[in-house]
Amino acid sequence: MAEGKPHPSSTKTSPRSRPPRPAEAARYACEQLASLIVHEPEGVSGVTRDEDGWVVSVDVLEVARIPDTTSLLATYEVRVDQRGELQEYRRVRRYRRGAADDC
Image 1: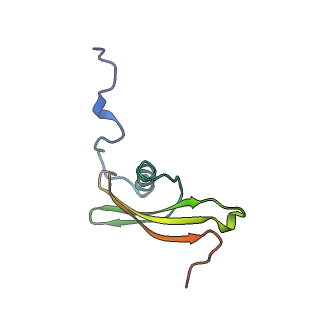
Image 2: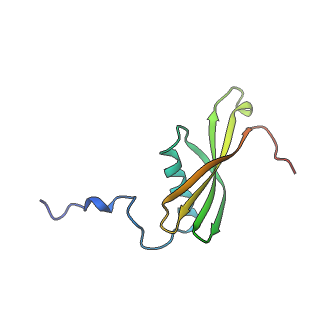
Image 3: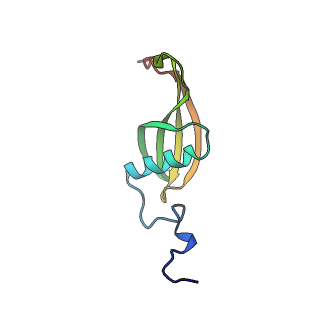
């Protein structure tokens, strides 16, 4: 066995040496959510720190329509731990792209 090859446990799912920063937590949340649902994330609308890690709000295009303003999007709440590993996710909102938030 060659010694210069990386060890199999050094994949992106291995424990990280330090807690992720907000941008890293958002990236990890998007990557892991995309691997579980059939839709690709479009963006992040919120990142909040909690006692166990991070809560990331990820916006996803669920149904593309023409015109684009009638497309259906959803916001998923994704929790990642101190190592950036996904703990849970859930869809918290579904809306039309052109719809304004209630104030």
